[in-house]
Image 1 (cartoon, rainbow, N blue to C red):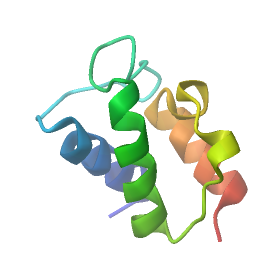
Image 2 (cartoon, rainbow, N blue to C red):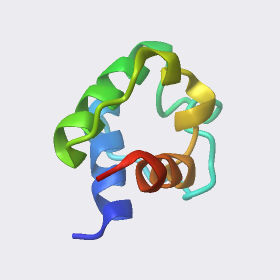
Image 3 (cartoon, rainbow, N blue to C red):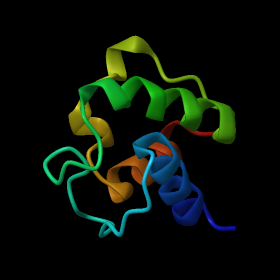
Image 4 (cartoon, rainbow, N blue to C red):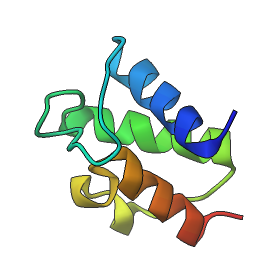
Length: 78
């Protein structure tokens, strides 16, 4: 499974619903996730991709879309 597919599965799991979201679509503006879901999303990303995401990065802007999450992981991942 490629990284983008894994991210989408995590978003669906955290959202608690099957969702069709475009790679560049805002997860927060579209209502897929809310600010409470951000922490759960980050926890899952840390677990699945074996990264440590500092509290200073916990902003919706950095994790607003599948593309942004993918870019973040590419930049900060192992």
